[in-house]
Image 1 (tube, helix red, strand yellow):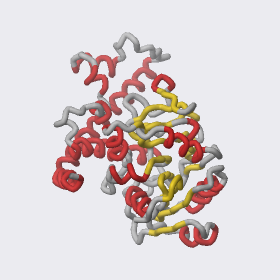
Image 2 (cartoon, rainbow, N blue to C red):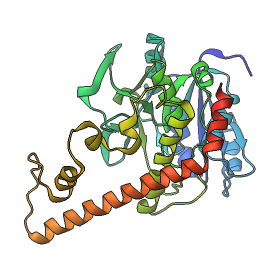
Image 3 (cartoon, rainbow, N blue to C red):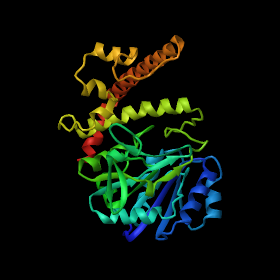
Image 4 (cartoon, rainbow, N blue to C red):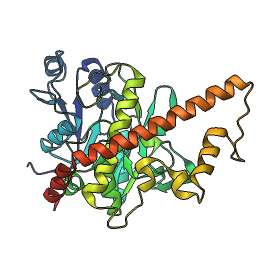
Length: 343
């Protein structure tokens, strides 16, 4: 491994068939006021001419290409292994750095305190709320959950989304990097939660957030092109649940009584945290009998549509729970083996 260069930021960008998105992302990096960086693009077996294009247009960029599709976590780990920076910034190829002081702010923030783990955040084209934060009750920037460090406002997270994730490379390797077997949604979960458990602060802030342009060439990270939002959301949700349960098994959190993230596992906050019976829960959720329910329906038809949608959602939730449990039982030995390799 090359010796890290002090205060150098290594920017790692995995890409798959996103030549045009890469152009926009890279050009926004070159507009940054902070110039002490290197850019590493890892192409995950693209079928377009990404490699030729990048080498012609951006000859100073380090470019690595996989002979076959290996998934974004593999690409991120590969990029970090080829880097020489003290810090790493993981970006998705369809993000854009609109704040020209973003990287400068990131370096300033992480140098201000030794116990900072991951920092980042993003906002979408149609939503100015800062997202990319794995927290118990919300995935948006919430002032009620915020702290201030060095005049920057942050929301505290359990993990930070990997489309804009900045951290010390030393910590990245101490946590074991990204789990290359994690697929679908929340593939960055393990890295962030391990940092969180060890007392590091994972944070997002508007001052270091990127714009996520949601590429039309979106795909899930098991190599399937997903152009329909409904299918994409379902695939990611299924893998998100699997990854959460896998994390608990792998790190023995339940045995150690570290149940800080139990509510996040199945999103059953109301059943877990409120002393109510299952029947009362059903009444509250399906028939709107909860006192604080302020929904006013204009007609019986509108109410029936609302109830039907709610029932459909809970059947989907039930399927995800069953699917998650079955998948993890089937792959239990592999998970236990990966735990041994960590020790």
